[in-house]
Image (tube, rainbow, N blue to C red; front, side):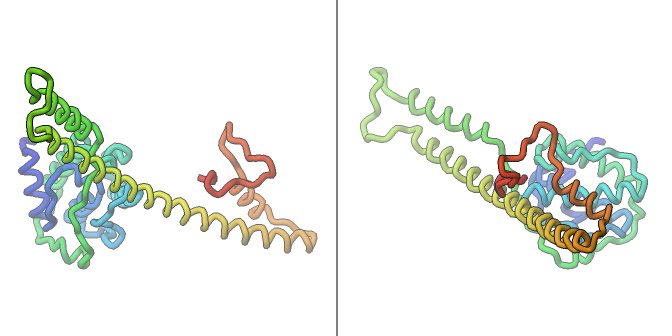
Length: 251
């Protein structure tokens, strides 16, 4: 396929009526889902989050896509662990394949992307940029400041080095990345707590029912199996003395 990144983005935005500016933004999985929906028209779009901001939400979108691929017998591996990192090359290759698939299978009928999303928000996703570019920017700013000194190594009159503006910009970029990563971590912690609370509720229910059966001189193999799963540990993991796991160490 000969499309450039610009042409792919133009096709994607026109087809889905969105406003992506980078190939990397496809790493949320939402756009891939709706491209396939435009072909078949039966993908569960209510489960697709176009405004996903956290990696676990990206993975949920790709899970929807994987289920459709399986149901439609589409023989194409989806490298979710790579795509959700929002790297350009991985998503470019998958978007190119998706465009070829669409070209070969799109039935040609009119498609209403907004209607299929049922008015769900489609904020243009922000991707987490690697720290390396900002680090290089900081180094370049430092070199610029050093290189602009006079031959005697003194700072020019005025008390401010020419590289200070670049340094401030690099610092602000790093601070922005730290804030974005902190938000990402908060989302992961909320997800951990959500599933921990679910497991805790199941444990309490199972324990209560087991005690009732034990008092009646009975037992239930299914309850025993559930307890075995709940209390199982990975190889090499040791339960702290006292048999109680600290909540922070549960996941």
